[in-house]
Amino acid sequence: MDVEKIAVSVVMNSIAMTDILSPFINSGDKEPSWDGNIYIHSDHNKTKKDIKKIPVQVKGEIRKSVPPKKKPKFSVSVVDLNNWLNHGGIVLFVVLTDETGSNNAIYYDSLLPVKIRALEKISQGKKNISIPLKEFSTDSNKKVEVMLNFHENMLKQSSFTKANLQTMDEWVQKGGLENITFTVAAYGKQNEIKDFDAVLLRNDLYMYANVKDMPIPIPLPEIPMDIHIARDYFYNVQVKGHIFYKSYSIVKHKNGMDVHIGKGTVLRITENAKKAELSFRARGTLSECIHDTEFIISVMENLELTVNGATIRFANSGRNDAEQYRNNLEYYKDVQAMLNKFGVNKELLCDNLSDRDQNNLHNFTLAMVKETNIVFPGATNGIIYGRFVIANLVLLIWATKINEKEYKLDSFFGDHKLAVFEDENHSGGPHAITHYAMLRKQDFIEASNIDYEKIAEDLNQNEVCPVVVEQLTFFMLEMLKAYDEQEEKKQELLHAAEKYCDWLIDNEEGTNDNMILNKLQIVRRSRELSDSEMGILSELSNSNKELAVKCGANLLLGKNEEAQRCFDKMDQQDQDAFIQYPICNLGHLSYEE
Image (cartoon, rainbow, N blue to C red):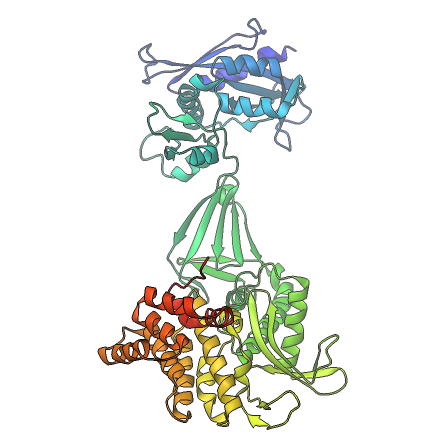
């Protein structure tokens, strides 16, 4: 049995079935590296006018099973690859035939210069390289598509068989890249070509860089191998009349398409819609995990879902998973309840949670929702407070020691008492002070559960005395520092700082120039200063006030040079202290060289 002659005959017969392709292929390997050509005619009469020529090689192999269970590969010599590269490429056909020669299947690969160069690069000095093959369609229009796309890209790549091809990133860095293009040809009557996505997915794609001052597109060495086409659709997704989503997305790929519902549900439909499989994995934010899990439970309980009016029904096989999803949903809701008790105002990102994150979520949920005590390994203090990181969240917590090992966990923004003394020996006191005075700039910047309203309303906790006034002044300045560094400015923080400033002014004996500056720097952050406010600052800047007051007043007046002169007159210690104040964020002071 002459396998090569059978292979050539099978390919020629397949090509001859089309309306604009003509095969001229020799049998018996009479010409090295080539067996002949396929011609693309410009009309159905197959005239010689405007014909296009595509070089081909045809090989045959005997297989026990035709078609094979797995997509076949074919070994070609690197010498042949180089010959094909030098002549702009080739379409390689491989015909698999059984031992009787009567059962045949055609496979192929379009070997264009960009692909050949990629194959040569990975051959690493080998004499032969194995090439994955694709099934050659039995649809005549799709056969023509293969040839049209090969010829189109062959024309664009033939001039670059030996040129140094720049990658997309290299063109971006080099400059002059105007855009990236690709073209795909479809063949058939206009009313027959309905799914352009399918045309895009079933044909090889090559990308070309359009570069400034270059007359022709330049091929890129990157070859998109696994193309996905995504589109959003704004139609309802519901179960038994209950609408869960008002949109979904469809991602098409070479093996079919995936319908993505929410963040976690994927309805995978195989090619030709022969099979539909539903998969689910909770992902995204905690709120999305809760909603998506409620959806998948409903689908499993009712064994159906409706997408854009079309109802899809499922077998009973998934109901065993529903119980696990119910347990997961209960836990997700407990975690949400825990975060609510902490006053978290940011979504928990559930993807990529570390083991430590999951353990902390579990322990904190037990402590806050189930009201169990919690252990902080190594902790000995009577009270633990501050920032605690879980995944993307930073929680401000307050934990009170209950016994030798255990603590009672609470939000930092609960009802907690604090007192201060006038010296380190705990004499002169205690004096009641809001526990929020322990917060520092970084807490306001990082924490996910700041309650500005409670901070502002807690002023009544404070005893009027010098040590409390000093602590609250420092606290107010920390709030202003945080406000200046916040990426998204929180007006609630500025409002809280202003309330503390007003309290300090109301409870000061006499006039405090520094507190006036603090009040006006808060105002300056929220609006333009009035004429009367500017007048107050002018008096402070021109009087015989201390240098720090005059410097601050000039900064608020926008007189940076005057402020700098005052700053330069301070001694080093005073400069180091002053430069830390948030009022300096409203100007530009520098040390003398």
